[in-house]
Length: 434
Image 1: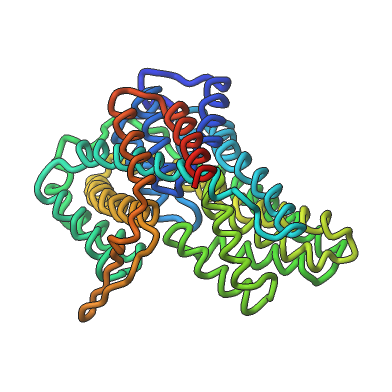
Image 2 (image 1 turned 45 degrees about the vertical axis):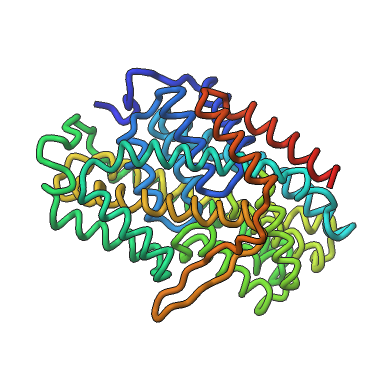
């Protein structure tokens, strides 16, 4: 079986562009909402990927540094149409939100806080919550096949939510458990027996060299033109962040927030929070907040350029060195993952990771739900454990109502675009009447 023959349905380049263009425009709600949207469109509506292949791709992306949702989009596109498909899917997932955030960053540095952005998109988050919950229920129903899978999912949820164990350790623990007990998690005979083409080490070497050239050539060009300064510092710093930050967008933000504010002084703490707010209300991966950081930092130290042009260049180089590595990880690693899927130890490890990822998705859904439906969330500590709990008095009844209506609409077969459009309109109306 060729890597692209993932289902009986073949996606043309045109269909890929239309579908991932729609995903890129509608991908609100952070990784939980974006994964849920891709599951709905690629697995349920289009039938391009089956459940097992989608979850295996997600498992692999969870192990990589960088934004897992963007890498999942790239992996899915690669499965469907090879490297061109991966480039199309990844770029269309990122570019709509990046363009919006660059515009909002320019408005921010000129006028301060962007009025009505949060209010205009208030209903969107509540609707995304309904999409996340629906996807979680469907994924859990297909991924958790027995008591041991439910136990691993619950253990992952508790480890993340209560004991704050680092995400990579949770996934690593599940992988080790599955590798030691492959027959328990993935009974013999269920592994994908389809024959995979051998991986070309020569092609992998060429891809690695080409990827490194594409990644670092603009960095060297910036140094040649502007010398050491903000542009070069940003390109090196965000290149390093792309390699060392495991655990998804929030792990990246914790690292970048400290360095950008305290070490490089590109922006103030309250500006970092403003950028995070803008990124949360635009489509695309949450890690696009780094584009805001790059824009603001370069706007204030433009290396002799007009400040606006400096900001645009800072945003562009940040976008480049953040996402080029993501494509490289997928194009190098995905062929090996596809080749090894039938290996019993790997099949067991991936099945255990799938169960753990279900717990991870539940943790994301709960965290997202608390922050959407309640105005205040407090951390309650007891011994070595701690738990974020919402303050009941801060419940947002309007958000509850929109989420409930969106959920009912989805369960009755409503399409995602119409649900999001209705929720957006409701959110605007509520804010205007408040």
